[in-house]
Length: 158
Image: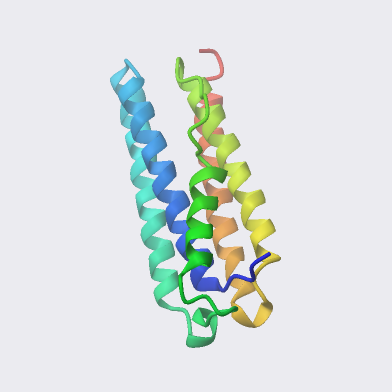
């Protein structure tokens, strides 16, 4: 098990948001109704903004929060993080995009998975390396779930 610093976790968060944005854009292409496509593109844009938020948060980290937790001259830990981010949440799994309701349900599930993922990653970040900053990421993801849930309620009869 690697120990990750806050900088590495924020890099992973940025990747998760990019993956989410791609999911919403692909879903928007698959929907027939313009208003549904517009909503999905709005969600994709929100994911883009969250990636920028995490970039900003990352830029505000101190040297200690960026310091390596292990000798890794080949950058293996970062490649490992990217692989985790690419496969853990918004993974290329079979998702029913036949209706907006199913897309929203899949998105909510992915957001829940990301929260569980970040809670697990909190355990891999030592306190002195920015463990508490992960709470900000988790709060952002919880906000995503609230928004998606409101949209799902509006589509409950579809």
